Length: 284
Image (cartoon, rainbow, N blue to C red):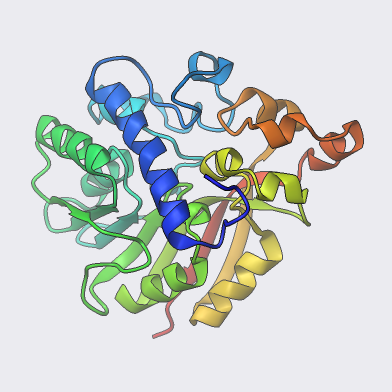
């Protein structure tokens, strides 16, 4: 597949779907923890990943099936930061194995509801398995694209997402859809990867890095601008983890393009690629 068509929505969707489907099957088949790296294997598949590791407390891990934790490929913990309340309706964009949906369902209680939206059949199958094991009755997983959310206008109180929006080839449409389905006063509270300043074009063009959450990451100021353009107010972007080049090289974000950077380019990446908590509100 050519790597110079990152704005081609179908190309990006197909590649992301293939990789995340393979990750789900790893967990479904009992073969250990999911990974976003090449299905043919690389060192990051079996080692500590500083991007995705230690995002959930022991208490949170004890509240959900182990498979939901094993399938997590996020870069943050939006459920811990979103301040969910009893009775609220939550939507997780790109819900994967369901970890953030199940945690959200516990926080909003029996009078609340949690939706998960994912395009990958294997992830949806894993999420349903986890929902059943958790006995979560206030949960529903939906198949679809985050650019076309299959819910009515003004139907949810909070939108969360965990390192997924950066994977979309049409982020503006994702933000417009998020704004549409939020109720007036509703909250946008997602974890995502952002960058400060530009990153090398070679990394942007590398589809491996795209699936690994680096190449698709928006520049921090640009992300805020797009949220404002979509209609959100009270926008803020709070870094939660800043990555060094060593982090990127040892994680599933590792890709050929990263390995080919000069030493100066590597040094320049340190601290400029980060996991962040991104907030916004739909005005009343």
